[in-house]
Image 1 (cartoon, rainbow, N blue to C red):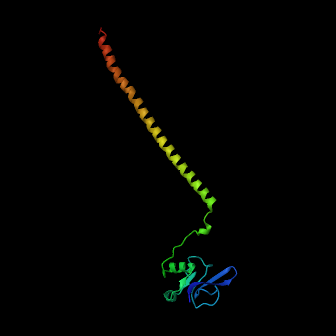
Image 2: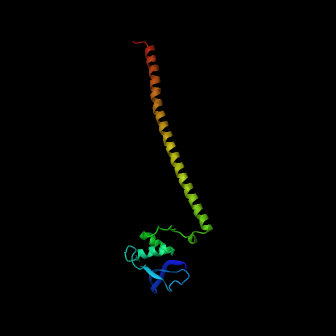
Image 3: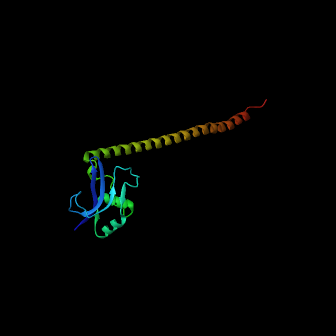
Length: 165
């Protein structure tokens, strides 16, 4: 007999309440079960200690007997530290975007990347232009000083040539 740890629904319409049970995997969801191992009340806040109650000793016993937990029960057991936490995919494949939507997403990403590269290039060009302007200003400032020093000996030579009266 294949054993399964799964949830059996109780409660009324719009007010669910689940029992965590061990049962034969071929039996219907809410039918006979072998043993009740805990409860799950989704109507309580997620930080409430009574939201999930588990009988850890009996769960370990049934896991030792070969019972397999359902996906949701495995998450509860992983959070309780009874078994290693299962790999949880936040996004099922069914809800993934279709082909056209994926193409649009790729186009948007490429446009965004191109815009970032253009902004970086413009920034680099602006920095290069600013450095060129600084170099030009420094050269312009150095040129009059060089001209002044070059003209000074000529003025002294001209002064030397004129006779002193």
